[in-house]
Length: 137
Picture 1 (spheres, rainbow, N blue to C red):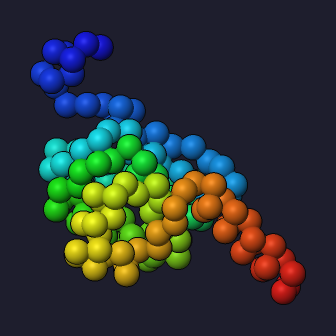
Picture 2 (picture 1 turned 180 degrees about the vertical axis):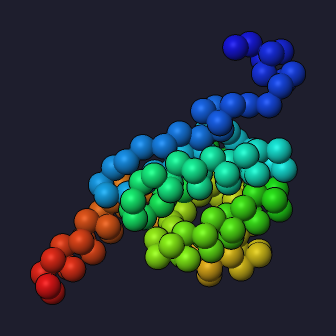
């Protein structure tokens, strides 16, 4: 697809994010650099649909590609966190770029979300917690 075609219509869900399972977690990687008013609602519904079929694995939102998040994107993150917590699932943000991290700090959302540096750190943490759970059982 060339840029002219892409500008004429909305991005497909596959262009906005990708999903994979690794280390007992569902990794949702945001593929576009701007989380704006157009992408946020589509992303939220697509993530919830995809996650519903994945059991009770922790959901990890990978933000390494995201350099900008509009207020609707922040709202979507909060709504996702609430949705998954109601289901008894863990919701983790990782790979946050400096500008996005500043925004989370300004809005004090960095105190609300579980934030880890990278996917590798998430996997290590989940594996260590899994081993701790197995050792205490």
